[in-house]
Image (cartoon, rainbow, N blue to C red; front, side, top):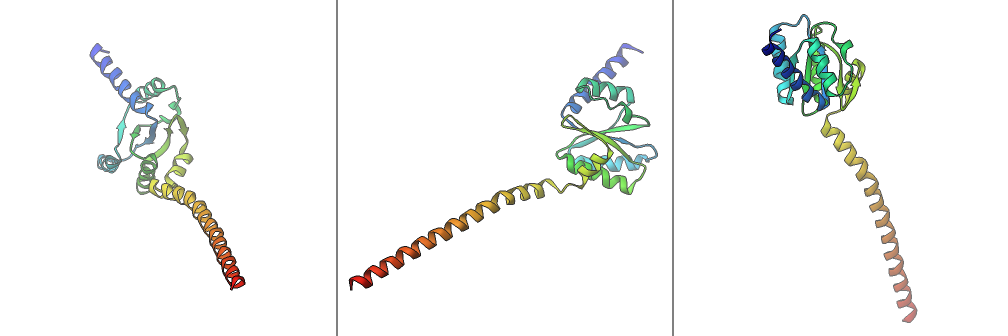
Length: 177
């Protein structure tokens, strides 16, 4: 192997390791997909800021080792691609699951999310989660509901107090007259 080829491979491993270290990676098998289908999935991933890179198994394994030592070598059995980064890993997983349903030759094998290795079922479960905005709305509602209840209770106590004071005032006015 030439020195230039070795340096190029080291640069590929370094670049992949940096992106893997960010903690959002899915491993997919693409054997049997046409060039047009690969272009289509890459185009669908682009708005999510995710990239699909076809990479040699040995380079991918070295990149995972350099990024933190998570052993993913069992996922690289046939031609594989890494789907890296993305704004929202849930949306990326949904996109991969939807594409795999329409194109059965795309095989989701697993992934790495914030340092935790995911198997196929966990990636599928991630794809079933509601969108981020819906989850944030649910959290906001769960915080708001007890506060609204507390405000209602405190308002009722205050109304009862004001009603009692008003009744006492009327009673004293009647007794004084």
